Amino acid sequence: MTAATRGELCFAINVSTWMSANRETAAVTPLSIVEPAVATPSPAATQPPWPLATRIAFRFACAFWLLFLFPWPVSDWIPPLGRLWGVWMDKLMPWIGHHLLRIQRDLPVEQTGSGDRTVDWINYGVYLALAIVAAVVWSIADRRRTRYDRLHEVVRILVRYCLALTMFGYGIIKLFKGQFHALAPFRYIETYGETSPMGLLWTFMGHSPAYVIFAGAGETLGAALLCFRRTTTLGALVVVAVMTNVVMLNLCYDVPVKLGSSTYLLMALFLLAPDARRLANLFVLNRPTQPAAQELVLPRRWMRIGRVVAKVAILGFALFSTIKMARQNGKFSFEPKTFMDGIWDIKGLVKNGAVVPLPLTDDKSWRRVVFVLDGMNVRTMSNERVVTYNKSEDEAKHQLTLTPLDEKQKPKKGPSYVLVETRVDHDHVTLAGKLAGDDVELQLQRVDPAKSLLRTRGFHWITEEPFNR
Image (cartoon, rainbow, N blue to C red; front, side):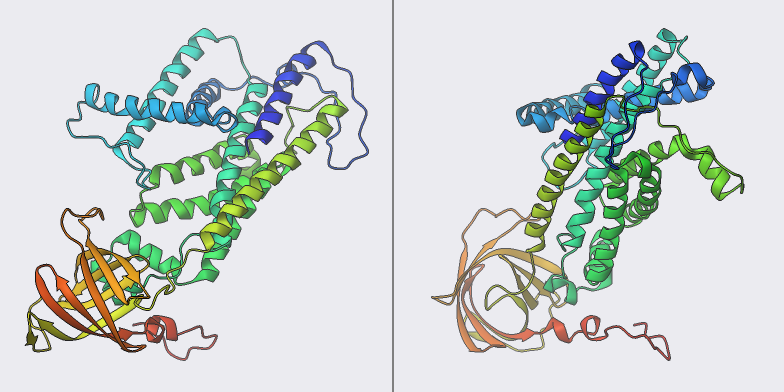
């Protein structure tokens, strides 16, 4: 990712200096993957000036993208620099929120998996404000410049590689089933009314691995096409289609990556902007269109070969790293790891030596317990999740150690509880011990989610009547 970008940027800067003093034509290499040099006059001398609105828009976009990407790609070459920048930003954004925007509440900066925290919105607002100021100052100080072809190519390289490698990350992780895993057991016993919009989306996606792979293939295809200048426009079109759908899902299902996904969509639109008229001629106006002019052409054979070698090497490393991470994430599963993992109905209850008659009528009484991974959550008769525990299971001693958790899924202060398992058979077990100050004995019966309609309905080419339940 970063080395490929760095290679092209270094070549771009060196070539810009070289071409201003030298116009000789380089020999065409026999390698088909190495682009031949073309001795063309300076674009500024042969093409009309950009309209004023275009120049101002480019100045703003250039400033915003450089601010947004900074300190990448240097931060990837020097990781301590990236961490130092992150620490500084974690101090600056809350300060701006408190002192300039007069936000009185705390502004947490801890990573929570959300990209739509208050500090994230402040960060974007700062970038937008700085980009506007930069565009105004730049426009005043550089009134005579009419085109920015070479600078546009450099910024374009930065944006397309950042977007390409981001799409590779999102796409490949889906191909290896590292995102939208198979459903957790408690999803099978939730009602739609108590599911969050994001949880509903994750359930929808996780139910169909084939659809997840299809979505990942679209993101991966767009990323691959963005890696080459000749296919950048096609890749940007693919990414626009894919990311428009992603942005709408994030907006409509309240997924907290609205800022990030919208930014990636804007990146793709930025890459398409130079071809807007050509695309309109082709798709809308039914007019002929001309090939796009390649403004940045490497004049030396060694430069072209070096660029290809750097691109192949670094993209190969980036793909290897991404695939390795995706394979690791793909190993995650909600499949049972221990005997107790799964869904259990409470079929009998003894509390402090007294048998509690069933069915229970108290809405707060336990109805089901779900053991998943290292946790346990409890459903009441009203089917609400009211208690959550960390679970540690000792298979040898047939014991469960439960630690109560608060609403933020952090351990509460207080004792943990030990329950002893008595296994009748694979589907029946008794748990006995002290729980929340009471001596309890729970008789549990396993619920098999594989027998649910969601799992048994399957796929049908022929359906005589709609089966919508």
